[in-house]
Amino acid sequence: MMDKWIESPWFLRITALTLAMLLFFTVQPKEKDNSNGFSSGTQADVLHNVPVQVYYDDESLIVTGVPKTVDVTIKGPMAIVLQTKAVSDYTVFVDLRKQTIGEHKVTIQHENFSDKLSVQMDPSTIDISIEERVTRTFKIDPEINERLLAEDYFVKSMTANPNTVTVTGAKSAVDSISYVKATVTGEQGLKSSFEQEANVKILDRDMNKLDVQVKPAKIKVNVDIGEYTKEVPVVLNQKGTPGKDITIKSLTPITSKMTLFGSKAALDKMEQLNVDVDVSKIKNSGIFKVGIDKPEGISRLSEDSIKVQAVVEKNESNTNEEDVIKDEEKETDQEETSSTIGSKEFKNVAVDVRNLDEDYSSNFITPKNGLVTLTVQGDEKELANLDINDFDLYIEAADKHNGNHKLPIQVDGPRNLTWSLSNNIANLRIERIS
Image (cartoon, rainbow, N blue to C red; front, side, top):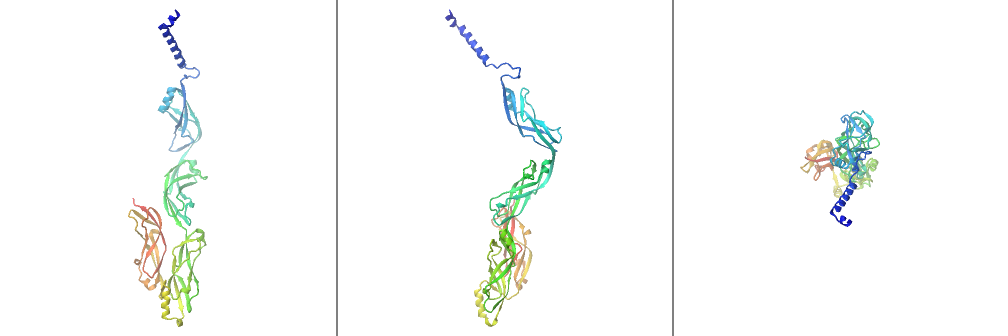
């Protein structure tokens, strides 16, 4: 009988139903627990880096101490937690509209979270400071590490464009500003002037960066780099012994001053340029060239040689015309003259810029407006009829592009004359035409 009942379809149906009910009650969540108010389906999650809104009078006040983001822990029914993370329509904020100037401890608030969620901030309270908002104008101090410069070069000047910035921030921060810097950089061995964009840095007395707003945040810095130079008088030293029956009455340098280039230490020691003249080679009065040896520590001279005027007295009893001719043939660099040597000065002579690419324009930094003084030495008879139109002053600007360029001023003029310039080097600013 038992076997028949077990094999009955009703027995199998009742057994299956019983097992199904047991399984259902095993996985079914328990009813709400009255002690905590949540079902066993509760889930907790953390919302990271939630932005913090700050409500205050941002036209006249500055607030510090509010973090940009906080972490928010939410706890509640799984479906609501997941929906909150997905939609993100909540707000985390600090309302300071009723707070006065000074320091305060405030609570970070929130809105638009479901009331079925438990919401916790990290941090939940913060210490903030409310100060008066001020705006001031500061002059920029451009700077460069001078160790980047090539040897024997230095920074002649640095200019910022614009040369001032407007700084806005909390009064205490603005009051503590000690430096407004714009630092430019470059490769080691800088020799040429250049222009570079630089960030503006606002620093306190301890060189700490201050949390303020600066406009403009970037400016252009023009760096004028020059070579150490010094102009010194030329002093002639007689060397050797004059020929028989020859007396050197005077030796006068036509170029009375020379520009030296070199290290600052070497130039500081130079008070004059000594030029040795071998008088044993002088046979007649006249003008002749003398080479110059570079002094120690001097890298170069504005000229490699100078012209010297010699006045010679001879014993006529031992001198004849044939001897004079032979002496002139031997001294190929001597320019004989029995005329009086004089000088003539032309002021405000314009220097021309030649062969500059048509896509570029040029402006003289030095000499000012591209004008120099030209001093000419020679026979007074020739000087009397001399006109400035007899000379061409120019600089060669072929293949020169954006930036500052130091270029020699060249002179084309009549032969048998010598000359000197108030500026031998021009500093030319070249820019592309927009």
